[in-house]
Length: 284
Length: 311
View 1 (cartoon, one colour):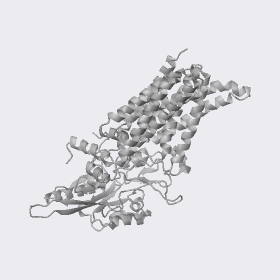
View 2 (cartoon, helix red, strand yellow; view 1 turned 90 degrees about the horizontal axis):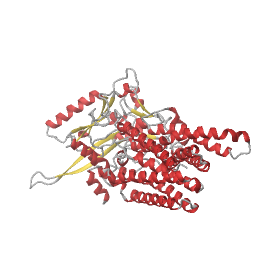
View 3 (tube, helix red, strand yellow; view 1 turned 90 degrees about the vertical axis):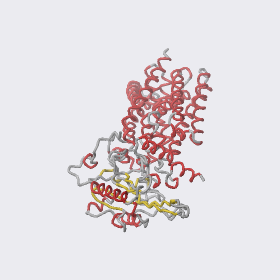
């Protein structure tokens, strides 16, 4: 159904000979405490400018969403839990989740980039080359998760006008370090490592939670058969993806690109035919 | 509380958008129009050249040059870093509609430009230039016309190859909207600048182009399920209604005014304005569908439920 061949090692597909193991994140939201250390560590390490001090008035989340100046975003969801018995009281549960770029196996942002600025690294991750990007904006609506965005700010500010997103700390990976967010996470809600290992760990964790009665627990992005070929950032969620602001069944738009070019070709031929007919009808 | 209602409809995070809306400024929407106008004009110019209608040929070639110049200006101005425009030429990438569009324009531009310049050179007193002009103009003009359909329709792929639901779900139909709109605008410009003795083909093209454009818009508005609601939302609906009214008025005025300069001018202006409204209407529908998470979440959830994975 995906139209993408399975399985896919994105680094090998991008032409790397003998690439290192694909790496990624496993974000286990069941142990996230919403401290936002990941948001801060990310900004500090990567020199991401402040996104301003805005009170959104919806929860403890005053960051709102991922964007050019937010590469880790902690979502807070407050849910009412109905009382178990007539005598009991309604209670509240908090869901917290640190969102990040998914580093898709089939990344629409990378596919549509017309300058080659967006690049598949040897680790299988997706990064923007700041010295190449010309801010055309093609990648921004292409992302099915709403991750990448154009940086705004005064002219001459760092990377203003360019597309920006999580690099999975490409510079740290090269030096054998973990990404800043995973390093800073105090509960190990954010785990970094080879993706195969993380997927296994995520599967183990969801089985443990199910056995403990947490039947809501589910994995997100771990399926290589999904619309983006599986993600490099795997999540364990405690509710439906959309509750966290994640699309329930994301699709890499370029999956349908062949069909789109064909339709455009047919429409183009129709144009030519109509013009020929218009002149034929006006023959003098 | 519309935020709350939206959140309820999609069950999404505080009703916030799931995807990012395009950051393209009005330049790109305007370019959808000028690119189509250039393409439509080049096709008409080639036909006029081959069928011996010099006034029509001349008007259309000059129109395509003007539209092409505007297109280049819009495209460069829209960039976050206009000075890095040339980075578009680093790669040739079929998976990137914008890359393909860049190369289409790069091939089309000089040809359409050369065809137009031969018209101007023909006005020079220099006999030698005048002599080689028509042949050069024909070759360049036919080359431009061969690329014109690609120029007019790739922009539909540019919009459809995104996560914007109202565009992506319309990927089978958008190329026809843009093809019709390009023909109608090219015909409109021809009616505007050509003496009525040579506008016959342009008039036929205006009728056919407008019919194609309006039929395809009708499909967007009614056959895309939930996504059609984006095209029928107040902002886009007003523009698409205007596009329909202007298109029909343009065709009617064109037919009624076959021998009237004034009516033909009016018809041409209406067709051009109609095409502008089509582009802005389609663009705005995309923005509507990007802003409201329901357009993203509901069809995806339905898809999961249909495949038995939803919970």
